[in-house]
Image 1 (cartoon, rainbow, N blue to C red):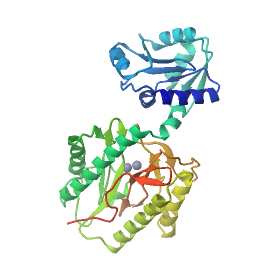
Image 2 (cartoon, rainbow, N blue to C red; image 1 turned 30 degrees about the vertical axis):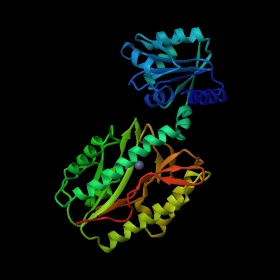
Image 3 (tube, rainbow, N blue to C red; image 1 turned 45 degrees about the vertical axis):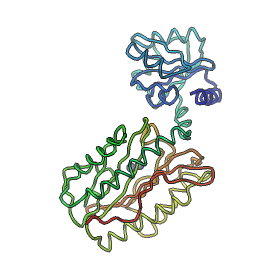
Image 4 (cartoon, protein in one colour; image 1 turned 90 degrees about the horizontal axis):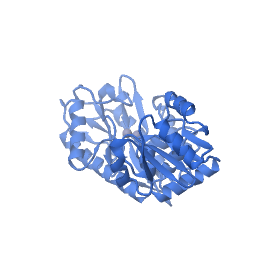
Length: 356
Ligand code: ZN
Ligand code: ZN
């Protein structure tokens, strides 16, 4: 990962820090390739250490080419103090969003001779723009989502429990190489479809209900995220109307997604459609988010967001309308921002599917 290290060092120089301590699991993985569940990176202007305990030494050497692997004994602060002396660090950044107050206190108390500075988003900003390998993993995950959806619309029928549907989706993707579900699968039917995060329950799915299915697959540690809403049986006039409004909002945002536009501008396009049709009060979340090693990461699309979208960013577009006691609709696709516009990674139809 020499390119990533070079970019991070450039950012370190901009913040006038001699080094950065990274403990967040995904940031460690992104920077070094080390997949273990515990370890610390210490990045200085000219050296890069991966500190792990006894369990991970072999794995670290195998996975993290170019990093100096240091085995530490607890407490880690002893090893870190020695590295600070050896490298002559004077100022050191720590990830303020990822370090607990307890660990912060230990670092400040036990690691002497260095000044600690909170930093945020240094690695996360790099992670927003994906390289070809990352994009390939997420494309494979998205393809599994499409196949799982194709399968599930044949499997769905009145009388199925939401939990059964969720399990079927997960098994389907895992049998075909998915490492796991991106998150607890959402299957929300009937009035439960008004819950934007209605994790699958024991509820039986019935005729006349909307079913929101929001799921994703992990491939090589990378997540996908996908939602479709289907109707069991025939849709009423109001159900059809709500679905059409969400679809129109989604299309408006997808069509405008391109480099140079801000995340807030894209959010506004979808929100305007929903507001104009009188459902604005029922769309209470942001339009979308980035995905990658985490299911939710930057850039976030919400009202007023000023992040400028750039090629290589991957975002979801997922407007929804949720009417308490009645139900709801959400349509979500994952899109890659390209040099000239954007590419939709999910290929499933967005038209309303009727389950007979
Ligand atoms: Zn989702
Ligand atoms: Zn999402």
